[in-house]
Amino acid sequence: MENVSVRPVTANDAAAIAEIYNQGIRARIATFETEERTAEERRAWIAGHSDRYPIVVATIGDRVVGWAAASPYSSRACYAGVAEFSIYIHEQERGKGIGSALIEGFIAASERAGLWKLTSRIFPENIASRTLCKKAGFEEIGIHRKHAQLDGVWKDNVIVERLIPANQD
Image (tube, rainbow, N blue to C red; front, side, top):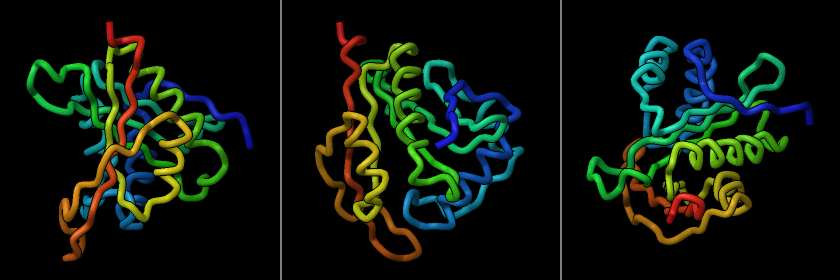
């Protein structure tokens, strides 16, 4: 594997993030979203994202090959340190260890941001994401049955979470 670096997102990453996200949308294995994103939309998303909820990208050289982002779990103050997250790897780069570098960098960024828990929902058949999360210390804590429909088919979601002990004082 080539050298993978993980760094905070910049507005210049918007086109690559849109491309990678759109691959996930088209594959129908990682998100309920069905409308593809544009670079302009992702640029606005980056600009409107709070520093409290990090977005990081994985790069090989100057090329963005993956991204991970935290979003608020809830608007209630008691959940201020809990974030939902998404992680996407370029389809040509999957299975090369990029996900491991990216998720570890993302967890570190989340710890620096003061988050104390990360959570996500994964389609049961998305074995690669479930394996990545397990390897990174996430636990599968339950299943949302028939959580939503994708292309007219009910889909379950496996719930994963990882505590960040350094921020639980």
